[in-house]
Length: 300
Image (cartoon, rainbow, N blue to C red; front, side, top):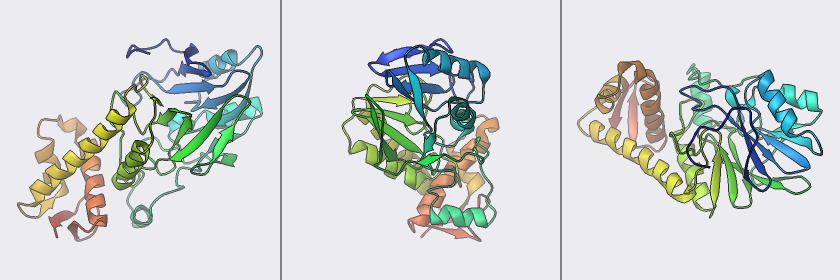
């Protein structure tokens, strides 16, 4: 389970009842590619079937042939690199697709207002067509013959994001990964919700996290706390700048990310905007003229 790229398309045993198949979709956003997990021995749940890709479908079907069968397709969240293949795989195998809901389920009232006011999606590959056959509520348990998965609603990266706990092992989707921080880009992403979801995971005592991309997280508590501290540090930088007077979002980005290539400023702007929305919602900052990514912000 070392941080070494696994072979694409090969079902690797991670522990009893857990196998991983790496999808052939590497990119700067997906790292080595999407991790598809197979849970169970004879009756198998497929977690995050990944992209709509024939070679990946074949790898999943080959790994579950010969004495085992798939009973459920489970999706952690409706981003295309996790969910796009789910409907077709579910149709071919004649099994239900299970998730918290479509991409928009769980969106906060403030984010919904911003959407209605015209704030466009960040374009991070949201699967607007995704709709599960069965919805899995927060705390609900999905069971097979030798396994059970408890849904932990963890909005932040996306409002319909769930982690799935199998005892003290948790499949964390894109919420907690070792190789990168989770992207939180409004209105699809929500920093306040992300931090609350991290605190939710901290209340547990888990042994290992299996993320949607990259190697297993062997220090779940420490990594989750680091993600919280990282976001809080970014918030402190923003507040320090605003202590000098009102600032436009672009000015904040150019100061905080002075050493970052300008080609990455778009993502950086979304990240800072996510923090400013959270600060506005907590009544820490004011905005002129209205809450947009081109507004001017000030401390209250």
